[in-house]
Length: 141
Image (cartoon, rainbow, N blue to C red; front, side, top):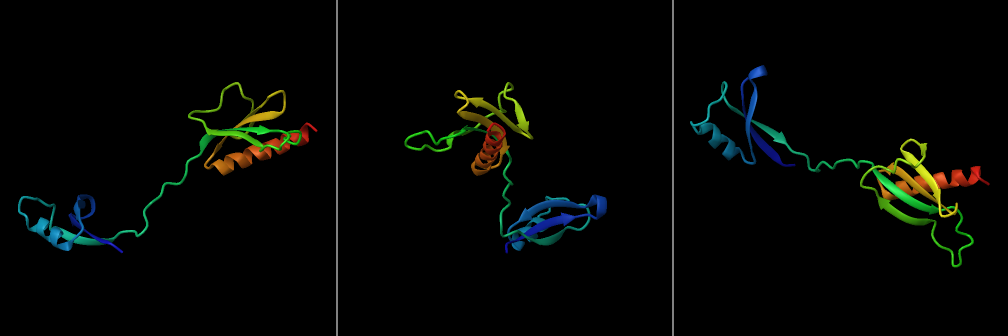
């Protein structure tokens, strides 16, 4: 665990952090330097730093996924997912909304679905698209 040395002074509303040092000797030298003014008596507080760094949780972004509705007639068989990309902005306005932050439009003479959704990962976007495809196939069979 790494310790930092914080030069503080004051109480309650007059409390202030002046500077943070990696060594106690540097903090003591700062207090001894008469060029600096403090509200009340300066003191050194010792604080431990985290061992782990903070990682920002992933934010959802817009994905566009093109899926085949039925790849069976294809010889040789091809993948369900025709294309996958992160969209720089939202999904086109003319696409019908099919769920919370989900849009879809049939394409390629009804053999594929262009699907758009918000997801934090590629895998999540593909899974949402496949779930929608399965639902669409069940409703149109």
